[in-house]
Every structure is written in structure tokens, then in C-alpha cells.
Image 1 (cartoon, rainbow, N blue to C red):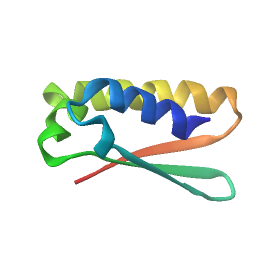
Image 2: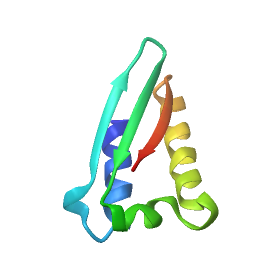
Image 3: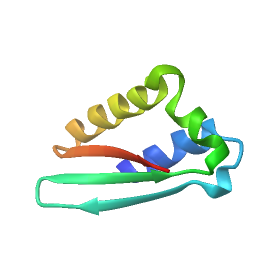
Length: 77
């Protein structure tokens, strides 16, 4: 559910939605969601001064609280 949410938001932001790859690494208490986009779309996902990335992390935090889990978003280059 959380992986799909991040994938949907990222595909909405970028110019090359077919190059968006999201993977989830599940731990006992925490899951790490890794987001990889095309190099030219990296700035769009991060945003000015990291505002877009911070907003995505806030949305993920709210959704993971509802699912009673802790999630971390990693944006890979």
C-alpha cells in the first residue's frame, strides 16, 4: 500500500513515469521504501530546497501511522 502511494506520487511529478522504480525493504518494525527515477527527473522529485521530498515523506509518515508501521523514504540517484 505505501509502495503504491509513493509510486503514484512520483509518477505524477516526473516527465518519464516509465522510469520510476519503487522497491520496499521490510524489516521487523520499519520498512524502507527506495525511489529511483531518471537522472533528469531527480530535481523534480526533490524539489526546491527539498520541499517536494519532505512533502512525500510527510505523506508517507501519515499513511504509515495509519497502517501502524514506521516507514522511511530513500531517494536513490
